[in-house]
Structure formats: C-alpha cells, structure tokens
Length: 188
Length: 188
DNA sequence: GTAATAATCGTATGTCCGTATGGTTATCTG
DNA sequence: CAGATAACCATACGGACATACGATTATTAC
Image 1 (cartoon, rainbow over the protein chains, first blue to last red):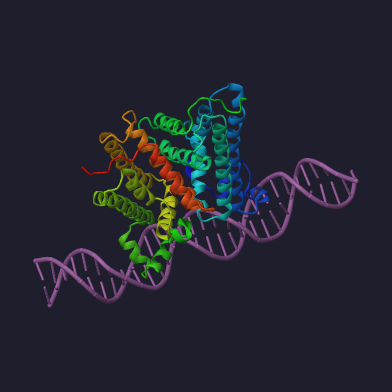
Image 2 (image 1 turned 45 degrees about the vertical axis):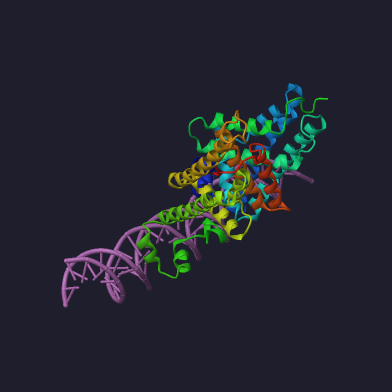
C-alpha cells in the first residue's frame, strides 16, 4: 500500500481491509500504528539488505571482478524493475518521515551503515590484492560509492529517457575510478 | 515549521498562527493547503538553486579551479550548518511526499535538472580547456557528481563523528576523478 | 465619494482517523 | 476436559483537520 499510494494514505482500517482482517486484529498485533509502520520499514530494510548480502556472498562461485559484483549488488538499490521500484518508494517514503522519527531514523541509519561496511570491505579487499591504489582511503571510497548509489536511485526513479542505462553507466564509471579490475572478490 | 517538526505537523491553522494571521486569510492567499505547501517547496528550491548559481557566477572573480568552485557550489546542498540543515530537512520532507504528488515531483525534477545542467556545463568546460580527459562523458560525469552530492547530504544529516569533514573529503575525491585542476572556470 | 476589490477574521461543517473497549471464538496446554 | 492464552470482531469515542461560509474592514480606482 505504501508503494502504491504512499504513506499518507495508509490507515489502520485500510491496512486491515487489505489484509482481510478487522481493525481489532491489527491492534492485537501492533499496539499502535507507528509500531506497525516501524515493523514494515524494518521488514523492507532487512529484505533489501539480505538480497545484497546474498549477491556478495555468492560472488566467489561466479569468479567475477570486485567491481562487477559490486555493480550487481548496488543495483539492488536502484528502482530498475517493478519490485525494486516499489521498495524504493517505500524506503524513500519512510526516509521522509524518519526526519522526525528517531525510531525510523535508527532503522535507516543501521541499514545505511551495513551497506557502507560491505562496500568498504570490498574496497579493502581490492587494496590487499593490489587492484586499488594503496593511497585510496577505503572509507572515503565507500562513502562515495554508497552516496552515488543513493543519488542514482533517485534519478532512476524520476525516470526520463534512458535513465536506467545511464545510471548503470554512471555507477560503472564510479566503480572504475576505484577498481582496476585485476582481481576477483573473495577468490584466493 | 517544516524544518522544525516536519511536514506532518504542519496544519493550516498552525501555519496561520505562526504567521500571526487567521485561517481565513491563509485561505485567501492559498486556495488549498496543497497549494500552500507547493508554494513553500518552490520557494525553498529556487532559494537554494539561486545561491548555487550565484557561487558559480562569482567564480571568475576569484580565479579558482573548476573543482574548487564546484566544491563550494555543491556544498550548498549539504546540511553543514543550521540554515542549510533546515533547508535539507524541508527538501527531503517534500521529496518523500513528491513520490505521490505530481506537482511536487515536478518541482523536484526541475531543480534537479538545473543542478545537473550546471555541473555538466562545468565538466564540458573542463574538457575544452584540457583538464578533463576527452573520453569522459560530461553527462555521465555530471550524473555521478550530482548523485554523490545527494547521497552525501543524507550522510551529513545523519551526522556521526566527522561526517561533515568526511563528506567534504569524499566530494573532493569525487571531483578529483574528473578534474585535474589545471585550469580555471570561465576564466579565459 | 462611491463602488469595487482586497484583506481580514471567526466559526461551522463534515470527515477521517487512531485508539479504547468489550466481547466472542478458536487453539493450545497440562 | 478445563482453563488459559491467542485470535478475532464491531463499534464507540474523541480529537484533529481541511475547507466552506458569511461577515467586516481597509484599500484602491474612477
């Protein structure tokens, strides 16, 4: 419902109706509406984070470059198809509300930090195996990569001609400024 | 009020009270609440865009590198001090609502496009004067730079130790992947 | 100076929504 | 089977809010 018509239109009674249950039952599971929404946000966040982690974990089997694996993983954040677009809309709607809700902000911060850590680990691995220049600060590079991904997500969602391809190209270019492509991730 | 306590808490009557006028008078100037909010969003957007354009326009007088000018201009989007933090909160709150409001989305798109165009122009100028590699696609580079700025803004707002300095460093690093720093902007 | 327009106010109306409440039925446990 | 817990429902309450409305005062224009 959030993805379809936005957070504003989500009410307890509408949610109950959509779930085919009564308002009372929703209250049985969630003390307040805010609890319910917080739960929804957590669900979506861990869902996305889980998919990203899955891609990174499956990387060694495919023997691809770090940049390629990262490109696929980060693409999970881009609204390139309908389910991801729905997720994007949910996450962004909550991001707007998180500005004034510590509980939501914490979920947001946690997932952002997890993503950052994952990227930074990849960069550090690149440094170790010699495909990333040793003077590159892994933390700064990770921040840049995470930031550009977030910004690109906005752009892809906004649409416009070729926004999706353009974003992939931009992300690839960004990764190319850090990774030379000489070695593979978690592949020793 | 949006910056202080969020869009959710903004009501017509509270707005009227804050402005020291009656509800009726607010209605006299804005047919609906949505009209009022749209107007606010436009105001803030043009305010920020104006400051950015001002910085770029004043650049020749200071004879600095393109990257340095861009760094200052893009820093306008980062919530580095209180007024900018307020603006950030306003823009992001509206961004959340723009997901389901074509009118708000259009304002957002217009300002984003303006920023992108300004950056792309700077990159093209860099190519012309030979400090940007000729194989760099100005559009892709501009997209990257704009995207990283947006993402960094989120990070700075989230705070954490040294987020501000870290963001400036990341932005500088990003710009350094495009500009070598050999020539100055609009300085011929 | 008068007519029209703009500025201004206070209140009423109708709706929507979150939550509280009190109850009933099902399921599990010992 | 008995008792407790969980699942489940319908409705009522109270508050908040956007907008409509009617009226009054100030300002402008001819």
